[in-house]
Image (cartoon, helix red, strand yellow):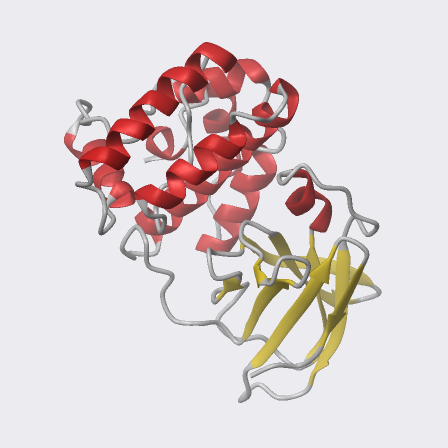
Amino acid sequence: MLPRALNVARWIDEMLAAAPYGSVDLLVAHALEAASPLTEAEIDEALAHHPRIGETVTVDGAEAALSAAEQASPDADDAELNAQIAEGNREYEQRFGRVFLIRAAGRSRAEILIELRRRLLLDPETELETAAEQLRQIMELRLRAAFSDQPVVASGGRTQITTHVLDTAIGRPAARVPVRLDAFSEGEWHELGRGLTDDDGRIGRLGPDTVPAGRYRVVFDTAAYFAARDAISFFPEVAVVFDLWSTDEHFHIPLLLSPFGYSTYRGS
């Protein structure tokens, strides 16, 4: 399964060396750490095994099933959209010398085309990191699908702690924000889990299903979010520290975010 999640030899070796893992969250947390950063050679190594968006998959059955599930969308059969994406793929390859990659799961073909056109305008360095982030997102999606017994695009039930990020500067959910959950014990912070906000800006599964009463923090990597949009921001990260006093209640930690300010509260 590991090569289907991210076909990078160095990453696979690191994942195998650290096994076994106590939970899917720990597996994913280590996978993200081992894949951050990816070198340009490793990005090319991984992309050698990814089909173009909209192309018929010709690899083995398991890989084909993953790709087909990830690319499924209501407008997947729109001939005009697919023709425009194919043309964008060719332009992208001429400009950057590699296959255009995007986490297709949860995105329509129209949304993919918009993102393809946006990324064609990026400088090579920014686009390289964007491609690496897309590889990490696909990797996490496939690992959770394989080891959590969940469909490729499903997130499962929510955990006790969840979050939602709204970009108030554009009035839309903030998608692909890296988020980490930490617990405070014995005078130190300890990581419990991490994830990326979905297209609705939400993470419904963040860390363990339930946690004991105590002090926790949710850390939002706002620098990565704004950098992916070629925008500057004043706060490179936002850490929301809170006390959880009940194991029977749901604790939702939303973030209202802009490049130069943020606010938070306990949501529902």
